[in-house]
Length: 76
Image (cartoon, rainbow, N blue to C red):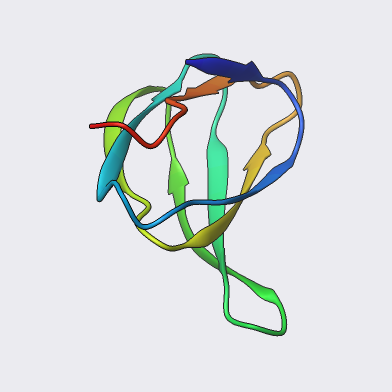
């Protein structure tokens, strides 16, 4: 899993439906790209998640001092 402490914009491939996300120290805002702008979808509180990512372009914005991890790769 890759560790992040700043805003990330990630385009996910079509081979996997979901991937693990671990929010460890502060809330994480997840937004989806609609072709023009990122629209906020939800705020994740610290904890583990299995998140739908297939074919999506998502933006992850941690609260100040936040750390989060996202499972990488396309293999199931």
